[in-house]
Image 1: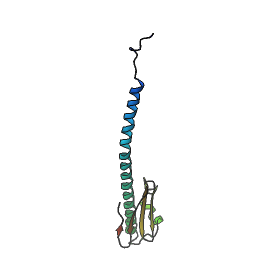
Image 2: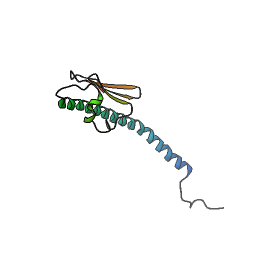
Image 3: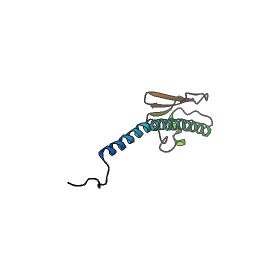
Length: 125
């Protein structure tokens, strides 16, 4: 018979305990990761909305106060690729003198608006 006491390595039980501990750590970290990701999406969404408003303001300054009636009018004031880092589920439109931004995260919908003619802002995140 061979002597098994001198073998190096881990037993199956030890490996299972380590795997269980790692599984618990992953379960604890996953919700926090989702919360951080959603917060980043919301901040990016708000910043992109503000970029749209700034582009409208620059257009108005350049045209002597004329209001842009669509998004095409302000494209030269935006990044060549449009809005950078658009979060998934977000849309940004300018129509009829109103900048409207919408973000959908799961079952939640967030909408921000800015009326170019009155300067009124609506919506919160």
